[in-house]
Length: 66
Image 1 (cartoon, rainbow, N blue to C red):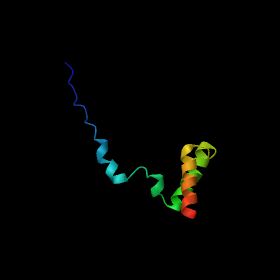
Image 2: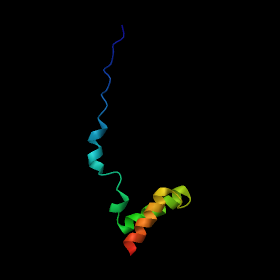
Image 3: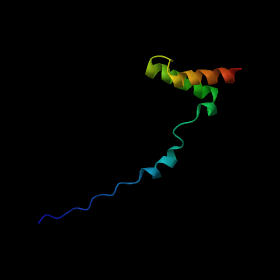
Image 4: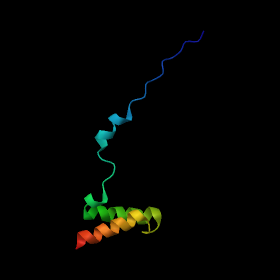
């Protein structure tokens, strides 16, 4: 009979998550520099600033600028 090899146990992904920090920040907690970076990313990936997320970023940028 063939010998069965023990299956390697997968490591829990939850252990790696705390090391990387928070994945997302709320729009109202972003700094002006972070907002500008996210707007540039939206422009590049989506080809424009018409998405709801991009409009929220623009509104927040106006609020911080004033």
